Length: 182
Ligand SMILES: [Zn+2]
Image 1 (cartoon, rainbow, N blue to C red):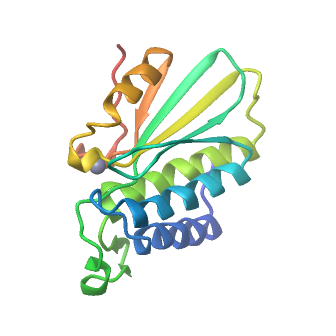
Image 2 (image 1 turned 135 degrees about the vertical axis):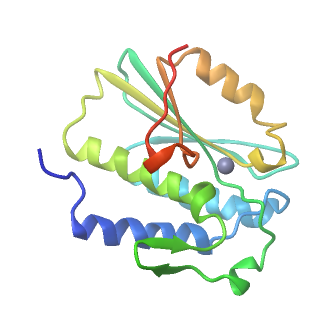
């Protein structure tokens, strides 16, 4: 089987990643991090996901994007916040050198969010059945601050899930997907 990702896709993914990185999103800045959450929500909505904005007092709102009505429930976790203060992008603008992308949050975890988004897009393009699967992307806003406002939401969603995937960058060799059955 050939690669599912074409050169065109690669450019589209990198362009999306660049936008995510240039939308700075420090955990401690509710206002600008909300803008990234809204941007992401709009993109998932365009794929056909229902968007729920989970209001949050101290940090930016969490975003839940849901698709499908199937019995197999897949939960995908991501966090939109980064440890970088607003303005870091001026010091370290997004750039690509060789086969690597650089910039605040590229690795943790906007690269993972971009991969998750395009994986969902590909699966839907290829006719994934909404009767068989249900997919929930939960994007939280306070992971780098300890997930104080999101932990209970994550736990609740995970209890109903058959599979939970986390979009954090893997530390395993070659970037392999790590999984664990619970
Ligand atoms: Zn992370």
